Image (cartoon, rainbow, N blue to C red; front, side, top):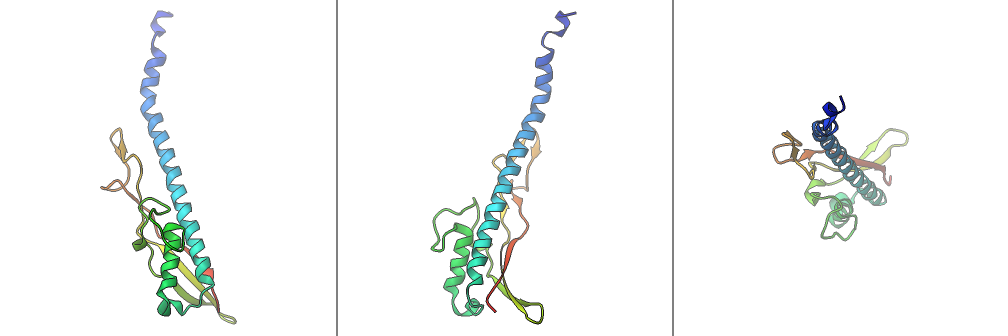
Length: 152
């Protein structure tokens, strides 16, 4: 009976290995995507905090401050930089911020800045016949935004 069991563990391992590898890849890529999402969200909060201290009229009168806010989002630095905080994030993904008055008695001025059109690029675009993401191997994020109370 013992001779019939030789190599069974190796065969079982060979059958389950592809599933374990796929689960490992998926978990790793999900962690990377979550990390990138949180990095973008934090940089948006920093930029909206910066904009909340500015007068809403800068939207038309001082484009340098809008550029500073966009640099905070993409590079994490008001002066800009060479490498973005997140792979593939560009200034073009950050539209101009918007100011709005909300509520009544008293109205509250808010500023919103967001990232649109960013696509996560997984390290592995496919495995064992499975494809991750779109035709380019990218997974689009929805719009990520941050809103803070501004000057009234």
